[in-house]
Amino acid sequence: GQNIDQPTEMTATEGAIVQINCTYQTSGFNGLFWYQQHAGEAPTFLSYNVLDGLEEKGRFSSFLSRSKGYSYLLLKELQMKDSASYLCAVRNQAGTALIFGKGTTLSVSS
Amino acid sequence: GAGVSQSPRYKVAKRGQDVALRCDPISGHVSLFWYQQALGQGPEFLTYFQNEAQLDKSGLPSDRFFAERPEGSVSTLKIQRTQQEDSAVYLCASSPRGLAIEQFFGPGTRLTVL
Image 1: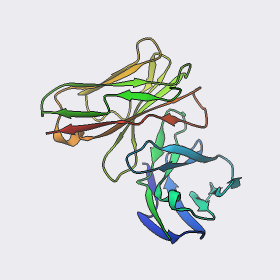
Image 2: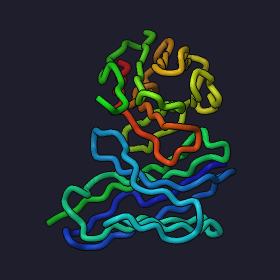
Image 3: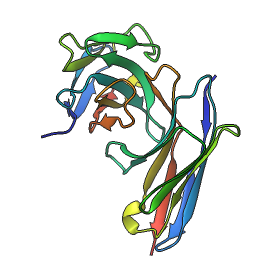
Image 4: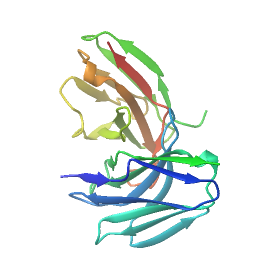
């Protein structure tokens, strides 16, 4: 079966660092993705990991451990505009689908 | 516009009606995906096209759901005899090729079935 778990909600303050965790159990694996979705808008791509380790991209970094079925998204120097839902997704073996978690709603306050 | 577009943006249907949702992917994108997103949930995969070929339809919830992409560009998702549980946002995404890293999502069609 397919199971992707991430916290439902998180809160943080401007300028802080927040880590959003994701654990997955899927029948196949062809990469792990993080997407950002503001309320009422389309998801937008943030990061991609296929090998173990950390990928850094400006204020955002993503980590993957395939043996543990674990990833996290690290957001630094938080800004109010970072308030959004963050979606963890695993691509299936055939590459035909992204399997999404339910998303983590992050609220950034001043 | 250079992005994925979807129409209509909002659709209200009475239970039992048929609806058709349209997706215009980014020009030249080979791969096209449909997802269903219920309120407060992540998107759920429905179906995948590579050009005009529907290579994966494992996510379609019932035979009331049908998708096509006859010329390998525009795609239509059709839902027959709509039911209240079909109420959701239907997202379309495209990517340049099969295993491209990024899928580009459209704004979605919000379907409400009364």
